[in-house]
Length: 441
Image 1 (cartoon, rainbow, N blue to C red):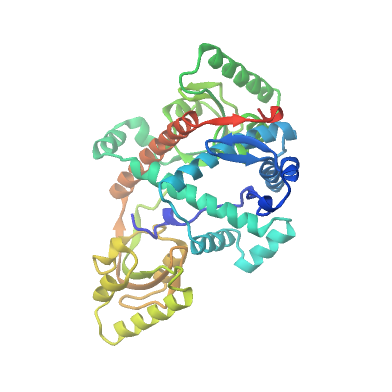
Image 2: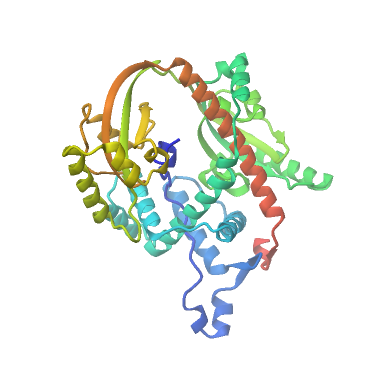
């Protein structure tokens, strides 16, 4: 998969903001620091302060309000948020220890990507943030942290999950999995977790909490608020929403329950090694896809702006390269010596045959507007600036390739989710975490 494929685009939505440690702390009297910025929890050799927790609480409540999710009482929400902040802090510590770095240019691109996802330009998005009382500096800090975590997860989770040809073949040979390849479920989820090596008493206590939540839901309690209040799943602060999931992306445990459910229904309590699950099926659909698609054979030269190469300099360099190609120089030779896409540069910038939806939208829109052998102007995407040239187009029957790709992707997604759950539990269990305030412990 190429670096500018759709999965590489930053799909970051507006999230709760974390207030960084006050920059004036060293200059303030010690008594003032204790009063204003009490330490709430120690996380290895770092701390989370009361001001950080308060800031996250305020921003989360605002975000829940925008999403029309009823927030639970502050003590409940604080406890939920603090555990998520602990896990985030552990991930950031590991990212720093292992040399992950995020540049200001990376943050700029992420901000522009979020603005585009909200159908706004960067300046419009900034004004909208200020109108909603959101602090731009704190938001950039949050983006910086989320990019670092994203890089960490890419390395620790996605890059370490492999799918063998045998697994794909077995998936396609199984009538049940093959029949469900184009079935998607829109789900919400509540997880009552249990730690590794939990005692029978701890497991029973978790089961009782799950039963109490399930009882409340059966009596028409609000599912989103229950998820925010009780769930230990990664999507708890979104009301437990998992979005649309292909059948092959979900654990067999979930599928066994979902096949007998109608939209709006709540599952029974499901037990897995990491805890007790409650599902709500929001919607279900079977996807119909065209078997024949128009493919484009394309190549490009990519330049990534950075601290040394500005956006304007990158644009001017691509324009100069474009002129050289038009004057008869070989595109492939220039791609090998200039492109920042190391994956395609060795092949003269050749990306092979691409399918609709495979590239990020900005790239695909520009590519689709080109005729054979035509050169684009510099095209900006979240990855950088591209000079694009189309070789040719063709109609292609995608039945077999689509099935193979869909099976591989669904297996990978399921295995990545399982690895993430195990990895986070291990990271949390091996850390030194000490709560210092009774009300959040």
